[in-house]
Length: 234
Image (tube, rainbow, N blue to C red; front, side, top):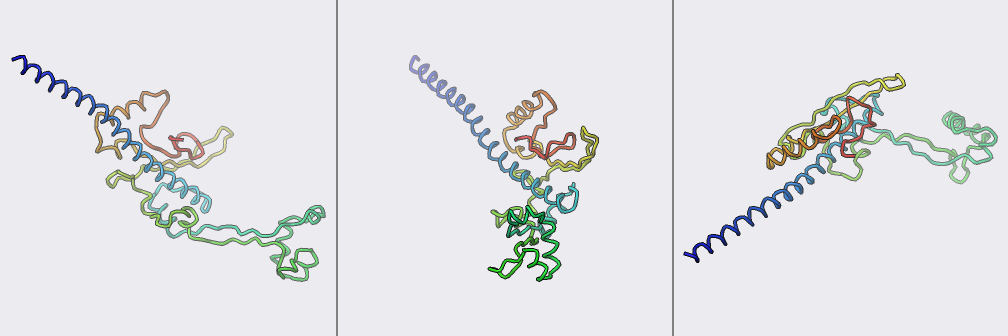
C-alpha cells in the first residue's frame, strides 16, 4: 500500500511539475511569437508610411486607399535630383547665386555661360549640373528590397487576408493652420487570433489599462493628433 502511495505521489509531483513548466514555457513561447509578428506588422506599417510620405510629396495629399497607394508604388515615378559642380567662393562673393547660374546655363547660350564663368573647360561643359531623373517609385522607396511587392502593402502579416484600417483627415494646429494627417492600424486580435486567447486578451487589457487613450494594436500616424507620422511602437 505504501509503495502504491509513493508511486502516486511521485506521479502527481511529475504532473504538477510538467503543468508548471508548460505554464511558464507557454508564456515564453507566446511572447516570442508575438514579438515575431509585431516586427512583421511594424515593417509593413513603416512601408506604408514610406509610400504615403512619397505620395504626398508628389501629389500634395495622402490617400485613404491602400489600393491607390499600391498603384502609386507600382506605376509612379519619383524625381531624384542629380547635382554636380559648385560655385566658387569668388563667384559667390561677386553675387552669383545657384539660381542665377542655372538660369544662365539653362538658356543654352555657351558664350553667355563662358562669360559668366560657368563653363568647365576640362569637361567642355557647364560648371553646374542640376537635373531631375525620374525613377520607378518602388525602386526609389525600397532600394534594398528588389522583390518588394506593392500589393502586399494593404495586407496584415499573419492576418489571414485582413487589411489595415486606414484614414486621412485634416487637423488644425495650435497656430491655426490645417495639416493633413493619415493613420494605418491593426488591432492585436487580428494578427494574434490563432494564439492563446487568454494571453491575447491579457495583452489587450494591459494596453487599455494604461493611462491615456492607447490603441491595443499597432498604429502609424494618427487622425486625432499631428504626431509627425510616428508609430505607437516608437
